[in-house]
Length: 81
Image 1 (cartoon, rainbow, N blue to C red):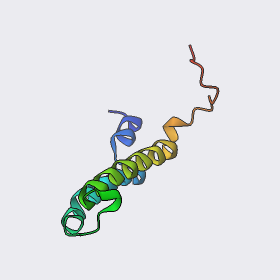
Image 2 (tube, rainbow, N blue to C red):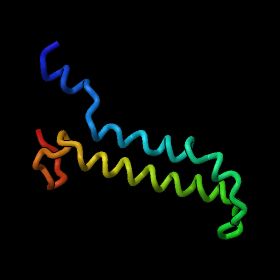
Image 3 (cartoon, helix red, strand yellow):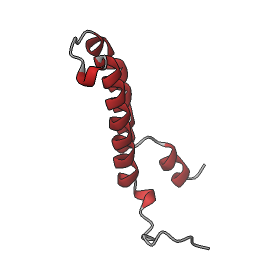
Image 4 (cartoon, helix red, strand yellow):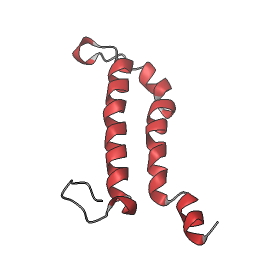
């Protein structure tokens, strides 16, 4: 393995963002299950899960934008040969 492969395989600080959705779902599930509030007539746990989907999507989008490997300078959207 060369140094570039070792550096690419090492988790970076922005990779820690991917832990946030797990904390959302597993860390707060017991709390969310005991909330009696029913937004839009849904059980709160169901609304919590749907909000978790939106939260996860935002985390993944931010993680993608922060990754320096995704900044090729080719913002036209076209394919390169």
